[in-house]
Length: 105
Image (cartoon, rainbow, N blue to C red):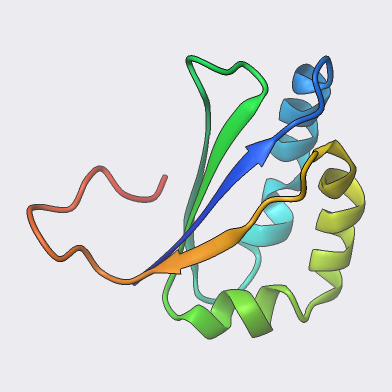
């Protein structure tokens, strides 16, 4: 399983609107084959920073399947205007040590 990770810096004052838009956009990503779960967590120390975690079966499920779909265009239209700066997305392989955490939800 692949873990996608991104730190999302939301424009100050737009946090509530972002959270609402993210909830509404979730079905777009969830409909992608190979999608296993998503978590979005708000930073405790920096109120406009969020951590996005998405679990995929394979890297290509995200990079080709989701990003190549019409659903991704809708996702972009709903969410990308909230970010400043635009986030860097990274992908991670299986855990190398210890038990897996709670995982996708």
